[in-house]
Image (cartoon, rainbow, N blue to C red; front, side, top):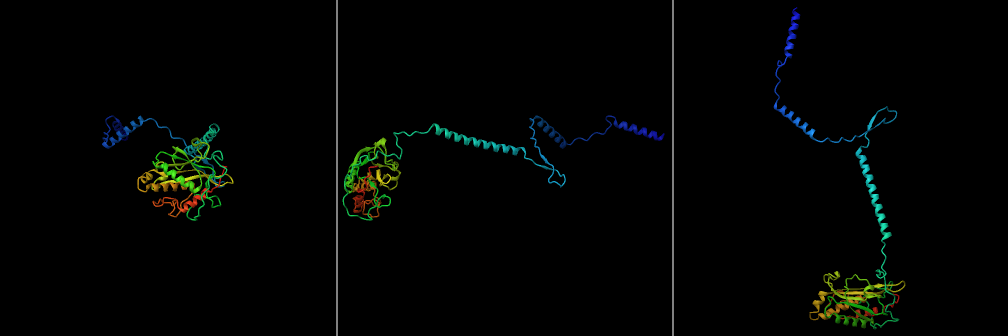
Length: 353
């Protein structure tokens, strides 16, 4: 009986422990643990407020059955090309298609433009290779004869010579050399300066010079020798004019004159000058013509540049007008200049130009 009483006693104690209020009180939560609970609650609240994120793309991986036969069924996982590599391939293909489309468009539009917008040359506007009717103003023989002068080897030179020869490229002596003068910027003495210079040149070469009057054309150094819209069906007359460095950049610094001529030829024929131009520095002439002795210096410069127009080149002999630098004491053609001009006056006639 004693054992039964002991069991009953233990049973009563167990029941008493299970009754409400009989268990010992729980320990109070610390402040640290309460802060953690509150933080987690805030995070759960924020997470619930955010919109759902799209699921990550599913990337499948292929499996290889074995590496090599005869070495067992060892399985391996081989990483296939993930979705982003596929995207890069698609992007590459797209770029290639776009490039091909652009190239096709360019080819199409070029063909379309060529087929529908081909420019038709205006027959009234000649190209830069056009030429006037051959032989305009040509006589049957030279219009004059150059004087007989003693040759002066080394004291004159030519701008150009015929191929394989020492004969100079010159103007056709069987037709007159026409010239026009730009009146803008010209000094008051321009007319007398040019008249005197051409009289000297005519005597030295036997050539004929014809004044065609004024022009508005500017001597820029970039001139077409054939301008039918301005001068008609002939080679353009030689252009003479006073210009500024802004109009002709070649006159910048200490350059006081520029001149030259354009030549043409026909198959089997000599090269012949057909037109030219000379530009004189405005500022230098204005200063020079107001000083003592300036008139003679200005005449020398005009003779020098017109010598270039006819075909004379520079020389090393400082006693000649064709010396490269202007010299106040050299104001008339020297013996070398005159010898060169005489040879230029004996050029070939070419009625085919």
